[in-house]
Image (cartoon, rainbow, N blue to C red; front, side, top):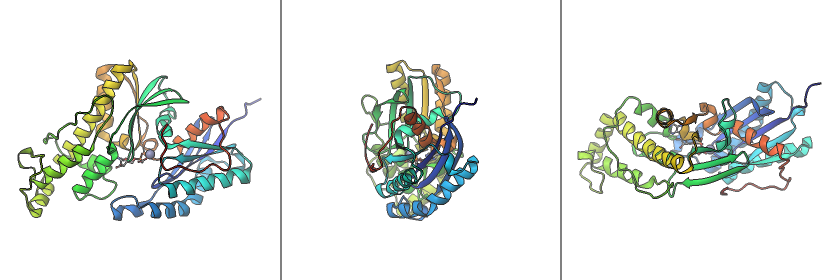
Length: 349
Ligand code: KG4
Ligand code: ZN
């Protein structure tokens, strides 16, 4: 007789991606992601527009996830959803939809922490990291080093004290006149350039990060049209000179900024690995889609004898597959949420 299976429908709606996934006994059967293009013209995510787009997308996205997995809603054993953190209006849409489905189907509800799910995305594919592992989680709102001792024990051992790595990419892109989200574009242009400008590396103790100083030095650098690598508050260039400098050197500027962000991230990750003695090293979050970071992590891992784990692109940026995996581990522990659960914009773990 075959073993009973556990099928989970997961919903992610914390920011500007509406996503639904189906997972059966920890294997992802489908992962549908609708990216909201509307925010591009505003240079960043507009919370109310995100909520409205989630409302519009959520039913077709869930329907597509079921169809792609080849199952009907009746086969679902539990509903997982992103409870926190994120934009509150965006979280409300996914939470309310998940709660209504759980009530209608009389199935349990699994409330998932978005940042924990990013880390656990490393357990989707094989080979999987062994516990304990370290995960560098780099997204638009967070930059963390997480010590993961089991799917239920995750501890933040280092984090940014100001901007997130994704913000550093996106704010740099804005300064360069590139549209939102700027991370993928900086990645693209960096491939065509060389890191010829040596942006200063912040000096922060311990395992914490800081990116706000880098953004300021880029601003000053551009305001001086790159004159002799000036990173201080001097304004020698006119608007036209600044633009001409950007136009002529975009690829090299992107390569230089990207290299500095990567060196900040990897230096702290090396420190964390040395301090803990852990050699299974993972990466997660939207910025882990960056090709320079993926390459540098692989190279560093080879040099230091790490086992590195880099999820495929669709599991790095916001997606419901990671919510499904995190929800699956909660299901195994009967860690269910009640139907009066509410979302939270900010909550740590
Ligand atoms: O995890 P994520 O999809 O959403 C959040 O929870 O924040 O991360 C989004 C961030 C954005 O800042 C975006 O610019 C960045 O990930 N990103 C990248 C790349 N792809 C996405 N940054 C650098 N290089 C990329 N290829
Ligand atoms: Zn995220």
